[in-house]
Image (cartoon, rainbow, N blue to C red):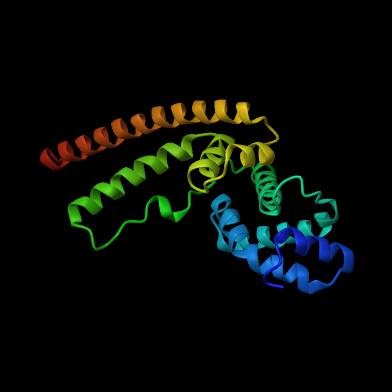
Length: 201
């Protein structure tokens, strides 16, 4: 059974309703779905709940899978849309979190290089979190998850040309926010330096 493709497992499950086929799909994708849910939510517990909801939806929707795209893309679409609905309903547009990989640094690096890497990561994270979550998610799908234009188009319901245009606009916006972050942190560092030199009495 481990040799079956995702699509074959779906066909066999929908034909027989035998749980072992669905369990195989669950084992393959549980961690990936959880990580994606966690990128939308601060709380690991909430991410677990979202993951549970996604797989519950998946069970109900498997019969509608027509193999017009890869199963992984279809599941990604379900996961993305469910998490996006959660964010909208909870009105937590500013609380989508970037995966820890954005600001993870290697402790074996030279201290100065590590501090610089952490500083750059902080600026990038600050810039990303200023963006609307739809644009931020599209950027992360492309550059963090490695999704193709076609995959993003299928998930978002846009054409590939529209996705390409939105990615360009989002990159330009991210660059603008990043430069603002650079100025912000430099001004903050300057202010701290001035306070240290001439403390308020």
